[in-house]
Length: 235
Image (cartoon, rainbow, N blue to C red; front, side, top):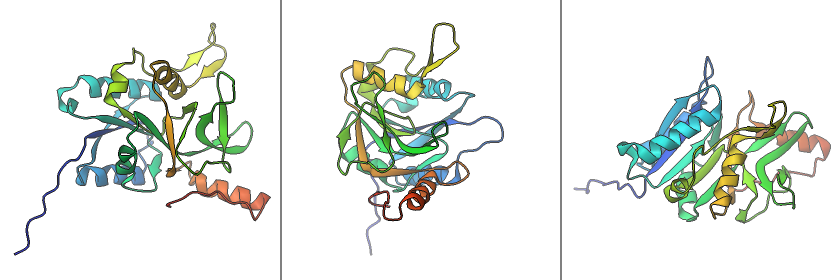
């Protein structure tokens, strides 16, 4: 008689999702990703509804650090409600790379410039860094200046070294001009605490804005130059 298979929880990750308010929902594929990881005892999810993501994310970090239910967990995986990794087992891949902070790549659309870029900023000597263009993704693991918070894995020891607020949108003194999003503020605090932010270019996410932005970006590039394609491994 065949032996009954025993599943062991190799590590414990909290998938932290800022859930949208009103009639907006977590994307079906995002929910499916969370269910697969729960079924295989890789990770469990927690979602907080809030009008702005930083409120939800700060609440989720507090829960992770202080709730007895999460005391044995080693990592938080911040995942947006409209984002989903191509690989359902991407968390195993990221965890295996053994970094304190490591992000997947997610396509974004900059409406003011009508351009597609990745959610990654590289160091260009400026304070804010330069957003990585959609057709210039490196082909190996690399350090970055900052990342958007759509799919980023962070170890507990990193969060324990940060002071509140962990995430905060910043404005000028009279609150008339936006300066920095809450996720880039978070990255700044991580670097000030002495940690590097790594990016795995092989770990790619869907990003839905009524359509999958990566597919739309590819179509956009092909229309500009039919020989130019976005190179994204392991899809």
